[in-house]
Figure: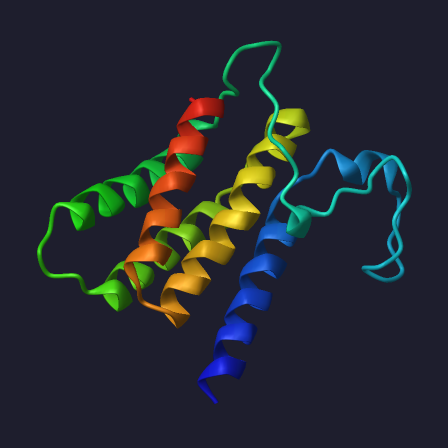
Length: 154
């Protein structure tokens, strides 16, 4: 039962993410009959964890309203690392709350948006994994994800 709930939450999060963001891919893809139909120009599989690229050697600017939720998650991760009480379930809940706020406030467009999604989709998977398997290894992967975020975004 819990596994189906996790799958439903993951599907819901990805659906909200997809529907709430104005992807640059929408400009070239006029309609989509099924999720598996894509054009060569718009094809990007986030589940394959594409490499994030810099903006001509510079970090991408994330909209302030979205950055607020990302920084809140990063603060939760930093605080958790320094806390002796390792309540992974509570951390996962806090991260998911901010993920929901982040995806519902998506205002970015263009390549900055696309590059952010290259970080965000795998990050969502990491948070889901932490919820399923509360472990130091899962937590470390989330910490590493923020290191990557800070290399490419400001």
